[in-house]
Length: 530
Image 1 (tube, helix red, strand yellow):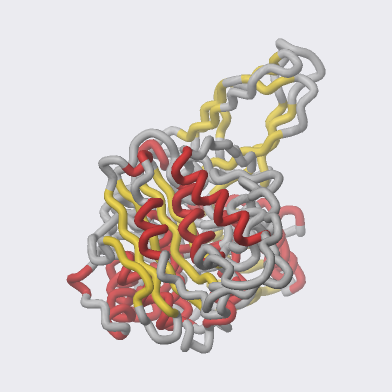
Image 2 (cartoon, rainbow, N blue to C red):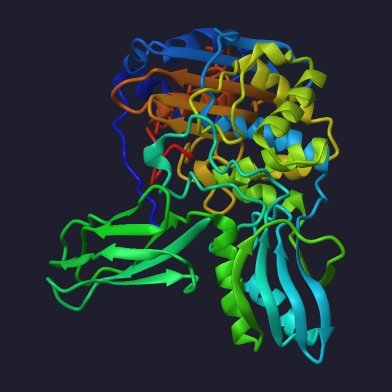
């Protein structure tokens, strides 16, 4: 999938403080100089100064910094104000799910026969039953088809049944914007789905767009998996070499008609775009039916979507990786679909039916156990995509501190994005805070949607103390304020400015570096999933 990156100009006030922090992070102590004991008495003033940045004019800001062990507050600003958390809400959902299910939990997908098998003929239906595996890949379905063939099935006289009844029939989250529903970050949620990418972009199809040899000719578009039940309308034209890319891929609401328009420059590399697929269970069944045919298994009747008949016998199974391993694409790449699946899986685990209502109640019960009252915040989905959510930075910090005592904490912590570290470890922070004391230190979840920016996680200060921090900005206008969030994290990692030397000669200090090479404070663009 094409990722768009944008560079930002940092306003003078924030840039000056950040440049100073970078200089402090890099400068060596001059020979022969004794410094007074370091305290962080300037933290409040430094963070207050960052929050006066003009990019926050008229906006709401909440910031809280606490000692991760003791809970001692190092800094707070409107820490109890309810704010939109954007994708930092994934911290809440993933912690509650890992707590309830365990880091070793695996998601299964089964194929069952509902009828007798005689001489290679199954007299009845063949069922593909979803177990909530959001990581199910096309190759996994092919493996299931191979198992069916190896079990001796050659013909199915009944239907291919797609069973996604582990979860309810509500596919879209409350308050999701209608114009997001074609985009990969707003997939339909079903207990039976398919992910065509290693990042588990479930419920989507991957389009590979290759320009023609010359301008004015149509580009070619390949769909993966090839048996995806979508229909392409329109075309993409090859533009002149060096021209702008203007690709538009939009699925019409209520079906799988996908409209293409725009141009791709001649001589450019193939580009990839994801588009959501309507009816994920039907999508998985269509790909599985084609896999069965390739393995010599024919199904006589059309696909049906319903529950598995009582008494059906399992003939093939697939298990996902452990949940602890699947947290990385959720948190590092901010995968909305995984977060929503976990919310519904929590509902199934708690009440026998995967629904947002049941799952979010389970999350509320988990938070109540941490001392967060259910009526003190509002959660309406698992990923943070809806604008109906409301959380305080204090509640987020409480979660971050409490998680440290959990047996699953190591897996969860390792799945967080890491500032200034290349992909895949860095995730959505790979190109942020590079060349600073925060690089390789800050582990935090990003969050962004129009007018909303957040960052919450862990940082180790110069004294070796782990801190938790949560910062969120709402109702911002104009220039992207993410560099301010980064400057907060850098300040925590760097510590206070050195005190005036009290003895010894003063050596000349090297010039402060404004930023490291390749610094890019806005990796995520404006995509709501970040």
